[in-house]
Length: 148
Image 1 (cartoon, rainbow, N blue to C red):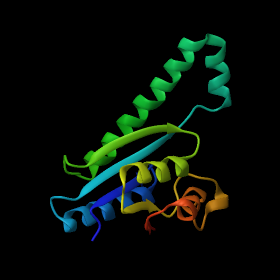
Image 2 (cartoon, one colour):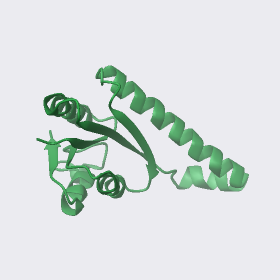
Image 3 (tube, rainbow, N blue to C red):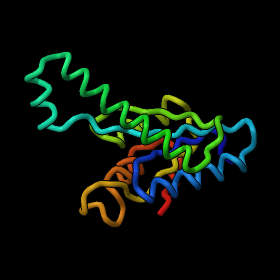
C-alpha cells in the first residue's frame, strides 16, 4: 500500500483521470496517507520574455507572478471539481520541464508513488506515451502509475 503519493497534473483529460485514481488510492490507504497534487506551470516563452525584458526586471517578475496566479487558479479549480479532501496538498512549480520538477519533488518529499496521465498537452510526437511521462518513467526512483 502506498502512503505518500504525488499526482502530476495539467489540464488534460488524462491528468484528470490520474487525479481520480490518486484520490481512490489515498482513500484506500487510510488516514495516515498523503497526496500531493503537483502542477508545473511552464515558464514564459520567447515572445512573453521579449516583451517583459523590454519592460525590465519588474515586468519579468510580474509575468512570473501572473503565470503562477493563473496556475494556482487552475489547480484549485481542478481539485474542487474532483471534490478532493482538504488533506490533499496542492503544489505549484514554475519550470521549463515538467518531468524534472515531478521527479525532483517526488524525491524531496520521499514519495513512494507517482501517478500521472499517459500524456498531457504535449506535441503530437508523444501521442502514444507523452514525452514528459516517458521522461518521468526513465528518471524516477519510485514506481510510476501511468493512467490513460
